[in-house]
Image (tube, rainbow, N blue to C red; front, side):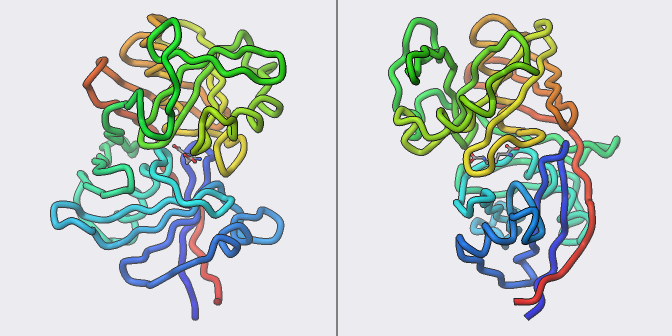
Length: 276
Ligand SMILES: N[C@@H](CCC[C@H](N)C(=O)O)C(=O)O
């Protein structure tokens, strides 16, 4: 059996995208791990499945799997690539696309300049995935790890994030703290760990150690999380330029009870097929 796929990327966060509207694909966790492997497989940070809608008000359903094979509820860069993919493949002919995910409904807009804007929904500060007690500042929590006390903001954008401020993004302890915090007991579902350097109230640099994939060149939901936490800390404005190792996103959030909007690129890399 031949399975057709596209390789896509958003700021270097890369995806294997499969049309499961016209195909019927199911991969085990081990198979996803093998396909994600950059030496023995195709290589990707996340696998995206485009499925028929579960709800008649939606255009598609969107499933996301990390490189370790676990299914998750949100992927911001993936959502932009999803929008580009369904247009490229002629699965839809609209610029506003409504998709259902495990985290709920999501709206994607293909912009005239080629970028894609994603309505990421309202940030949640006390989701089931982050059963932490508020401490000091709102949305600020302390995580103890090996003698160190780390102050981080915790928020869900459909998936869990913790964000800490660092002085110098190049020197940030992403490789050491990332793997410790990603599975820290205070985040029972695991967490994506963001390291944010604030350059000005409208400009940050960010690196993200992702749950299930390790450090990626960019994390869209992580960029939204950093912009929200920075704004709650009174350090950022409502529109923020987020520079990630793979490129730049624009994040807009008008404050509590408002949705977060993310704008950035989404690129097709190549099409391929595998035999099963
Ligand atoms: N790269 C993503 C996030 C993918 C899922 C994440 N690793 C998780 O486990 O929640 C993005 O662009 O948002």
